[in-house]
Length: 325
Image 1 (cartoon, rainbow, N blue to C red):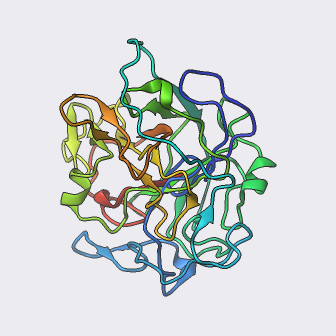
Image 2 (tube, rainbow, N blue to C red; image 1 turned 180 degrees about the vertical axis):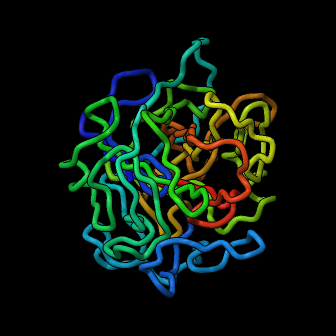
């Protein structure tokens, strides 16, 4: 969930956010079914190096659990007010070098919670690594985040960002220091980008995706990288064992909003990625998601290198990477 308490100055955004699983104020992902043993909060490695289904992924739930912001539990949280009468912007504004800024946020805690997918259900998720708002847990709401503190360098950034915890030899490997979370213009007409609506939330990616789906996901930037090894779906096998080398990943979020809902049952349908305007090289929002918002991009660095054969995510294999905002 993302939540911002102050207006952030800059070309791209000034406003409020609310997100979850890997993310910023509201990134979308498929709903999860509670694991058979919620206390386990993760997955276990099999003798062959695979993943045993303690809670390796998520499946679509018939209904979302009710929460203070979705009392009927139907999964829809309407925007109030909705944004109507918008058509995708197709103009080409004057060239500018910078259409982005960074939210530099440190890890605050880990927990088997996901307030977007499993609201009000502590311990129901695989383990997540949380950044930004220090209060983010299964009970989080827009109001609770607004009242919380942040590990972000900008004191007004009350957004919650989270992703599945990276495990090395079954122990958490947590990013050290501020992590780079970009806010970008995903469309060519950067002047059309609006602030996030307060209370927006979504999941980016899908922990149930296949390796091929991960590689071809529209948010895939460089995949897993280490040293001079880029565009990996799996953790790199040739990661140099040097003090200056870390495991990295970059992944972009959808940035076009339908203007109607702050959340939907699958935590992603209200958002879409920009598309190419036919006959041009310009990126525009699709007609059914015409409202341009900042594009969030995670650039995470994990303090691990060398032999990564025992590395895995709490959500499953390397290609199960996703995040919430």
